[in-house]
Length: 76
View 1 (cartoon, rainbow, N blue to C red):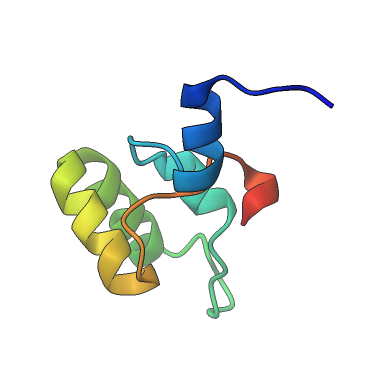
View 2 (tube, rainbow, N blue to C red):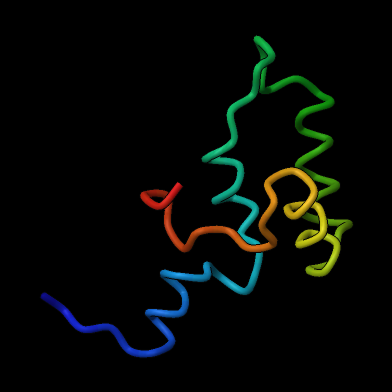
């Protein structure tokens, strides 16, 4: 069993401090038939380029009830 440093343990339990949009995209399920649609691509562009970190955290809190993401895909 590998021991974690305090910062590694914090990241596993609390998630990353920064919002990783690519991690979020990989783990987002789209109910529409075409996730490549222009409006979906526009949504990701706005979220990644126009939102600051605080706005991204507020968005996550609104849609997910948490303001951080898990640290890896396996934790979704």
